[in-house]
Amino acid sequence: MRASRDFWLSCGHHLLDRDAASKLAVTDEFLKAYLARPELVPPPEACLAERQLHEVMLGDPRRPVSHLQVAAITDPDARENWEMMIAWRDHLVKHRTLEAAYLEIIRRNVRFPHVLMAQLVQAILRNMLDDCEDVFVLRAAEMFFRPQKLTFQEASITAIDEETDSLAGPRSPLNALLGLPATTAVDMLDDKMAGSYRERSDRFDMALDLSAGGRGSIALGEVITRWLAHLLAIDVAVEPLTELRNAPLSWYVGLDSEATRIGDAIWNGSDLDDAMRAGLIGLYRLTFRNPADMIEKVRGEPVYLLAAMTADGVLRLKPQNLLTGLPIRQTEAVH
Image (cartoon, rainbow, N blue to C red; front, side, top):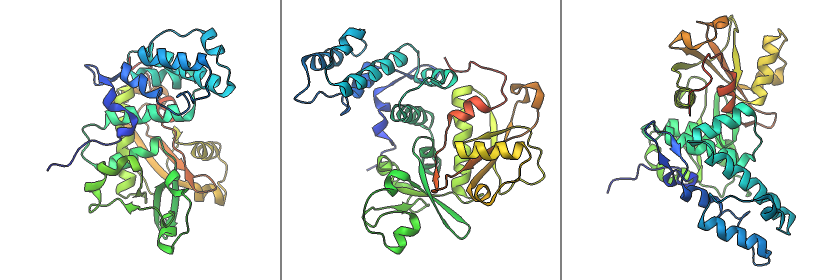
């Protein structure tokens, strides 16, 4: 029996349509999935207004909802949840694709809850990686929407899903090395385990070696390349580096808040303290295959990408930084 090639079913990609450009079109089924979230399913004690709103939305998830309908909900937490849900629904349906909706959020700095943004990023990645044969790339892509806890042994860096890492339970020395509780089944992704990644992908319980120049680091560079091609229609090459020495930092992008802080310090000529140096765990050189895509000021120069962990060893990548921080000419690549 042939193993399933599907993965990340939890993001709801199977509920979405795809247009001629392989972008994701919102469907009623996808919108209805939000109504099954525990924040929106009315409990037995819910007021009539809340129960009625949930019922009519299940019948027609695109139905216009007035401010008065939401204001009539008596429970303040439920009312706040519905206000956010309607705003989110309205934003998605007014754009032709999820990709366009996401870019609008990023470019205009629209505020939505992290959980909704993470699911949106995951759905876009799932679509973008549909033809990807390399499960190391799929695992690396998880870092775009799920924070990672990093552990170190000698020269190796291991990334574990932060939520998996936070599960309670006593730790054995082996599990402590990987940053996992003893009660959690976790495996390091390698050639032996690669065949089981897809079937367990929604558990987010595989570790990834992120050591400089290693397979995980290279895979993350591939995710970055595909992300920019899919959302901005630009062709780049992304090369992992082991160190940045005597390189003119003409342009840089921090892939997370900590990395941006470090990049700013380097740019301003400040000396990095020991904590900053220890926190910098990823370095990439990005080059444009078509220099004409770049702004004239730095045309032909490489862009350096930095990734850094927090003081407590967590890596929180911000894929939106790639979309807003690169020195590119075009501004509208996805519609």
